[in-house]
Image (cartoon, rainbow, N blue to C red; front, side, top):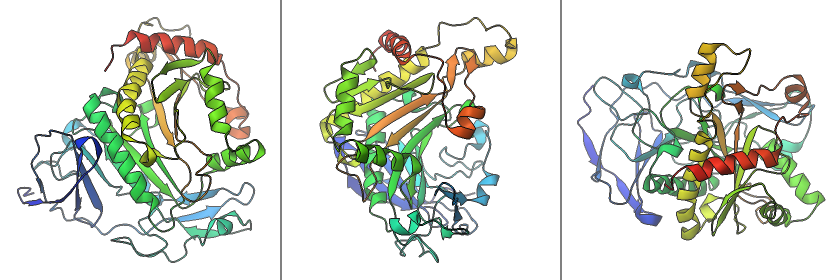
Length: 411
């Protein structure tokens, strides 16, 4: 493969000195480079010269009439790459021997997922996205219950690469790189929220094989949904049954508790009062903002080091524990003890069209790791009935995590 062809891409300066460069991949998917301030990269980027198949048709979603939930059937996702070696990393910059998804060297890169759960079709044809044949008409259409209801799974799924390196996570990045990623999240949140038919935007990072991660490359994803997610619908119901200032009262309640893990001028991290998971922490801005795009420069600047310190504390939490528990195989225990803490880092944002004055942006980080060599598995009661039993008091979990965070140096 000849990868020498290059071109200058359109550039836009964002906050904190980050520069965004926009391009496309060989099959028409959008690609964005977010350059660090002071980057060594030039204005040109290599062109994607791969011969790719046409993009798959947009998936279909079906309604579960018993719950009202919409289930997407994205069958093409069965063929995703599973734990490739470094020389076959699909998220690394392309080389003559590795025709990866990203043509050029980068600092941070975002591109449309090749095997998306939602999209590429939208309610209306937009850019390179076609118009869907049977999209949801509106939220009332989605809420209507009946047997055999289907709709096109419009939306967008994007991959966010935090680094060109083969291994790592958000927490292994520098403060400068973390700030670039935050700028990318905010920029993509605003852009995706403006697409026709999008109702909610969700940036997240899955970390660790125990979570089901199939690529070790440091990356996250962004889903742009055609509906308000079930979790957020329950939140809106709780706000409706209490008061619009529920988040402000939750933050005040947690800040006065012994569950605070760390705090700054603009952010507080805490283990919630009724935490389900053995490791669960939320990071919330002090000011009401509906999403990442609404954060001001000061809030974004502080978020980078605060979030990095929290993630490094999560990794330090079990580091001193090296003795396998009784009944656990030595090889299995050793592998788990030495592995970085698995987690899901979920950025909950307000829906695009409802609840923006009451739903506050927050990070919710959860991990199934309940000891250095033990994981919590969701069995009958939790999986089938969503009736949780927690093994660790939130106050105890907060004390442990606070000590771990204090043990790591400031990023």
